[in-house]
Image (cartoon, rainbow, N blue to C red; front, top):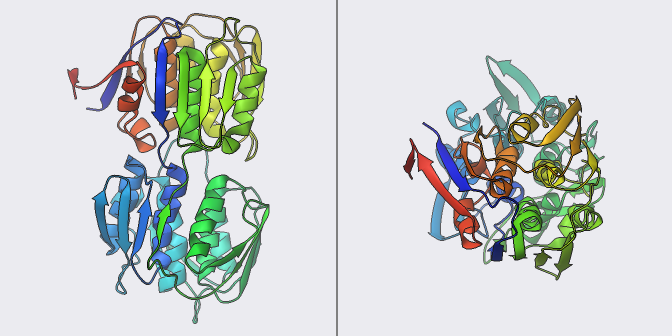
Length: 433
């Protein structure tokens, strides 16, 4: 039986207040943990979010032979032995899509890797062909063995290569950036993704001996070298911009005044400027965002998701909830994933006036009071959007399946929500968990 959140809505009132601390970035930490495979000694990492996907990555590495310790909250120490295994256990790897990024460093260091088709959120096609084509360009041979891919590097290890990614992909960019760290020669990734999490991963690798340049631009260059060293170093993962953005949207809809701390507002310029265009009062410092209630209703705005620095697809669902409460007509255009607007059916059931124009576009007519409902969280980001909708709504909402979706990417979310005034509890089989 899945776990659920029971939430008492505020019926549109702005009652929340206080401060909420942003967790370490899920999409940076996952790749940084995988990158420890490239190290010859112990690596110490901090600001690692305690979420399901991170636990699964540690489970994966531990199953392959890694020595992992957790000396204190948000801090982990990882050591990779010489006899590290190279076959990803399907039962673990299929539980989360992030498992695929471990293939790059394993293949680069140990010369071979076997992995099943990865899992993750069910939000449209995420083909594996970009990974396979890239490994082949680096000289690897690929064999399909049942439902698993067996990949073997050439004698002498992977070779540097030049890639042009047919589609910008964060995971593909990071996987080949890590694979190239130990490859022979120089690797160039063109049309690379530019997300801040890629810069954070490259910064971590460079501090420990890698030679990577161009991160944050569409062309990244990696000069291959030796095993990295974490000796005497502690690396702090960047804050989670999607976590911060989700709380910013919640604050705009339901707070008198909310401070979002331990974040980087520069990573959220697309969201912040969109909300300001809608009439939201926002102040920023280097590491904080403050949002305050206004006396005038919010205005409708259009959003189009795009790769960074455009509007993040991972904040599309929370922003759509915001638009249900803004005056006027808004258009939402999801350009990254097909099927990522399917959650709007649940918002319609809560009373939202949303018309699906096609699988990528929705028309939102704002100003309707949402009503509490029983909902099933379909994926990580839609699940958080349902939480925001439930807080705004009139009456009680119960959101099921949160342990398999929301817990994948949001650290202790109900504790942080309670800390700013949300009436929320976790229940299992109808009983408080």
